[in-house]
Structures are given as structure tokens and as C-alpha cells.
Amino acid sequence: MTAPTLDLEGIATDWMHEQYLHLHRHPELSMQEHETAAYIQARLAELGIENFRCGGTGVVGILRNGPGKTVAFRADTDGLPIKEDTGADYASTATSHLPDGTEVPVMHGCGHDTHVAVLLAAARFLAENKPAWHGTLVLVFQPGEETGAGARAMVQDGLWERAPRPDVVLGQHVFPYAAGSVHISSGTAMALADALKVTLHGKQSHGSQPQDSIDPILLGAHIIARLQGIVSRELAPTTPAVVTAGTFHAGLKENIIPDRAEFTLNVRTLTPEVRATVLEAITRIVNAEAQASNAPAPDIEHVYDFPRCYNDPDQTQSVIASLRAELGQEQVVLAPPVMGSEDVGWLGDSIDVPTVYWFFGGFPANQEHPPVNHSPYFLPEMEPTLSAGVRAAVAAISGYLA
Image (cartoon, rainbow, N blue to C red; front, side, top):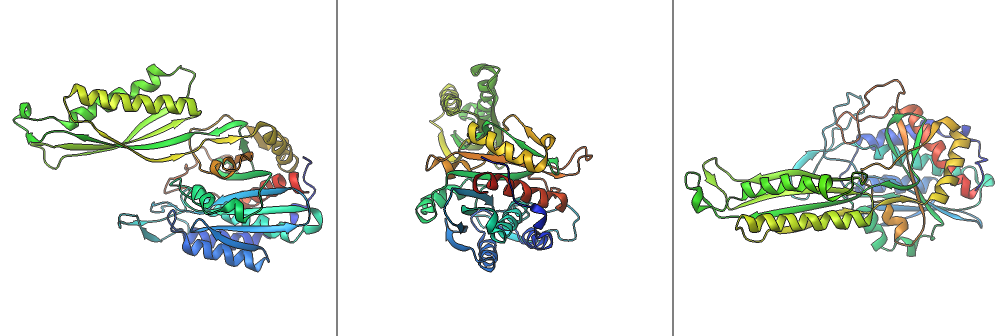
């Protein structure tokens, strides 16, 4: 891989800002990105880039420029059910509906508007500078990252039968780091994730007659407390993992012991082996505590899962060289993995192609506590964030195609 040779002074900044502002004002929930997909397709068509829908609300663009390698670059497109509270004059006022029909506010609280605007700008720049590179760029505008559904939906819809098979899959994510910087991991970059819903069955009784009940609330309390022992007592202290009980619902009145309780779990692990160990331990503890309470067998439902995001070490070193050549040695930091999760791994893993994924900063370097992703206050500064994101994307792509 060679350092980039393209002159990145030619980025269409005003055009990129226009795309960003439109996307920020018009977020859509996961797998509901119909207007977003239509908007992306219209921009690609204006640039003369062939494109097609994939995975429902996903969009794939193909920019061909003679023989050479093929690089896929992914940007996710969905927003979140959060009410924006950034104070920006372009803040989202959009609303939508969850799958159960609940109306909710929607904002780009994770920066996916930034990702789309950056990739569109990178595509425009490369389309206008074809003499400086050769090969094929596959632009993957992926829906449903927040629910873990989008990448899998695109693959199942024939993504790699309809688009050229890439030599590598690249991607990036804006994060509360200093704008202009990149943080990248070699090997495991982000965790596997699993969500479980546990339904406990008990026996209803009056609150004054507990002897006639099987109390699912007490049972649930014992289970949740015991689950915290998995990480602290069943894994080595050097093995990262997270088991979080995020919701607990039971009962309707203070003097009625209910006949059921439900809670949800979120699990993060860094390897398939640790994942298997933790999930087995959860099942064992839930069933054993139910038996200890003389309760019927609980129901354990696997709600969703995210794959591990694994950066191929050899490809990562090559991408780091390209990023440092463009952004500067000190601006590209080799970082440890994070316990957050991403579904980008499905794209490369499904065809045994290496992935390289990194974070780029979106906030002033002197801001002590920038808002985190998924916050109602999350609002990366437009510049230098967007331009630096394009420079990083084009530099990484050019390392393969320049």
C-alpha cells in the first residue's frame, strides 16, 4: 500500500455542508430510512455513480475507474429515538414511530449524518479526480446499524452478488475525540454484543399472603445480583466483559405479588469463546435461581446480536500509514478496543474479506467533556470534522487505489 497522492484541497466543502445539514434535519429510525435512501440515490445519480437499493433501505453506489483493486467503504444512515437538545438552529424536530406504534422524537444522536455526508463528499472528490486513481470503489450506505439489522439485511439481499467483491471493507465513525484525530485498533476493535429478554413465571397472591405466592420480583432480584458474579468470578480479571440489566418490569399494584416479571440484558465480550462462556453462565444462573425459588422454567429470548468488529492487523498497519501520511503522525493514535458494538463486521466476514474500521474526532481539542454518542447533546462541530473525515476516507481508499 502506498501513501495517498491525491490533492485533497479540492474537497467541495460547501456542497458537503449542504448534504450534512439536510441529513441532520431529517433523521429516520432504523430500517425506516426511506427518504434518506432516496436522497442518497439522488446525489449519487447527480455524480454519475451507478447505484441500487439493497436490504430494504440500504443504498449501494459503484464508482468504476478501470482495472485495479476494489475497496468497499461503509457509512451507516439511521437515527435514534432521542429528542435533540443541542440548541443548533438546524436541530432535528423530526418524529417517527417505533415498531410497536409509539411516537418518538428522532435525531442523529450517533453521528450517522456525518458519516453519510463524508462518504458522499469522498465519492464526489474521487469521481472528479479519476486520473489520480484506478480500480473500483463500492459505496455502502447501510441502514439499521443501531439495531444490528442493516448489514445482515444487505448481505442477505445479495449485496456481494450485485456489487463487485471487495479486497477490503473500510469504515469510520465520528466520536468525542479531538477533531482532526483518528483512533484505530489493530485486531479486535469493538465488542460482540447480545441482547436477551428473560421472562420469569411465578404465582400471583395478595401482598399480605406471600406464603401463597411464587414471587417473580424476588426471583428476578436474586438473578440480577447473581449475574454480576459472572464477570467478577467466572472470568479472569484480565478478560473484559460486561453484563448489564437494562430494564425490569413487573406488577401493577403495591399489594399484589404478580405472576410474572420481565427483564432485559445486554452482554459485551471481545471474543467468541468468552461470549459462549458468558451466555452459558446466564442461562445456567437464570434456570438455577428459578429452580431454587420453586418457579416454573423461565423463558430466555435472544433479541439480537452484533458481530465482533475485527481489524485485520496487516491491513490496519497499511491503513495507518496512509492516514498518517495525510493527517500527520501524531494525529493517528493506535488505541485499545472499545466495548461498544457495530454490525459493520457482517459485511466483510460474510465473504471472508478483511475489515479496517476507525474512529475520527468531532469536537474541539480543548473541550473537556464533549457529549458522548447517543446523547441529546451530541453535535460534532462541522469543521474541521467533516473535512478531516473526508481526508481520512480518501487517504485510506487511495492507499489501495491511487
